[in-house]
View (cartoon, rainbow, N blue to C red):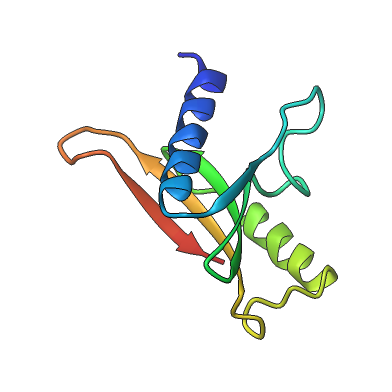
Length: 109
């Protein structure tokens, strides 16, 4: 299985979904050693009065370490999501086929 290709296809699905909903989406440029924004997020979206930082996964949720690093990043950058309702940090997991239809599983941090 081509894991890099699968990840790019899922990220493209997420981007297209957000663009369709009216968001301006910035996708991380894939450079040699830089793969995510702040080593945490794949997409940054602006629109409808919100800024959304999104990590896209295919098949499974990120581990606990990702959530802890994300909380620490939010604290360090003073983007307290509980106080600032205009900033959202989300994880989108693409669940593929099987007996159920393919769908997004979404979680806010």
